[in-house]
Image 1 (cartoon, helix red, strand yellow):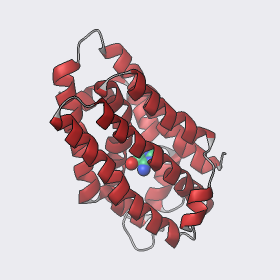
Image 2 (image 1 turned 90 degrees about the vertical axis):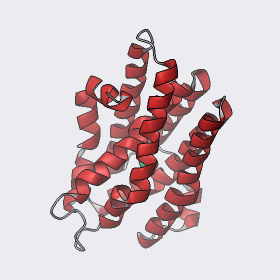
Image 3 (image 1 turned 180 degrees about the vertical axis):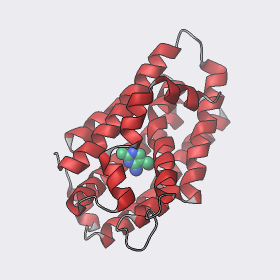
Image 4 (image 1 turned 90 degrees about the horizontal axis):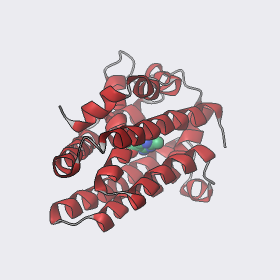
Length: 221
Ligand SMILES: Cc1ncc(CO)c(N)n1
């Protein structure tokens, strides 16, 4: 089995709480309150900056050309693609680039991004990509599930652009690359002795993704 599927199967309740969070359901049926989505968009901009740094850290930790290329593709997917889309989407929601740049990180944003960076700094590439997996692969799973709902991509759904972005080919390909990279690293480095610590790390990151939705929903700072 793919290592990502094994990790997910090890923490089913935490995974379902993340991908089935009320924030996600509210985007799917269009009932999410708009202030919650705006708060999320601002925090996600700050999140993406730290997330790009985590891929840059993967480049620093790389020991082979293949690992460097994977890290470089990760930085580019965020910096050149996802962040441009994010800034355009935010503008349509009334948030200027200056609004995004001047925002202060919420506690949930700090907690999640620093967990990932710390896992990468103190561990190896397998730790780092395990901590990153819920983001990339989870959002691809959420995007696909919401796009398949009857009203997911309907013109009446205010969240259709978000759903289209994460269910779209570009993001799905980036998520597949993350799965492949995790499998390559596991083939070289995974031992049964390491497995419990990797599951713990994956669980922590998954819970912090759910906290990120909760922060959006409750407007927590
Ligand atoms: C919080 C969060 N997790 C994952 C992604 C996907 O890149 C994102 N944009 N934001």
